[in-house]
Length: 119
Image (cartoon, rainbow, N blue to C red; front, top):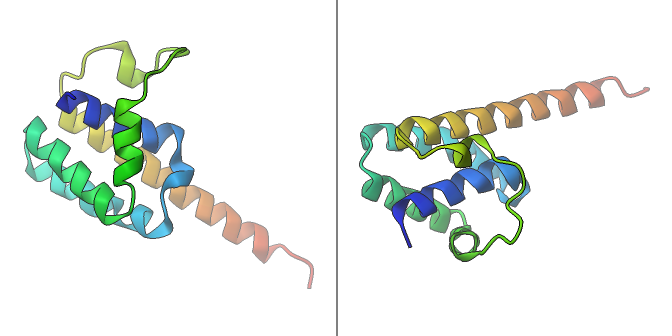
């Protein structure tokens, strides 16, 4: 199991299966992002930090299964599979930031939808 596979699997889960993350995990994404920034492209430490974070949020088995999964039909290339990860920290941090932003936008939309209900 390569470190790239661990990291790209986490990115895949963030982008393609966000429903597996509990609300507390979403709330902790900024902290994970900060922790990764401090590791300065040390893939081994980044992969371990991701594993620890997933275990803490009951996602350890899901990450492990994703890493082990063989994909028969990979589908269209995504930004994470089109080219080798040259700056793993930046790619990972961008994915975390974008996923967290989508969550905030979704929460804002849900809040505005309920405020428009008939009284």
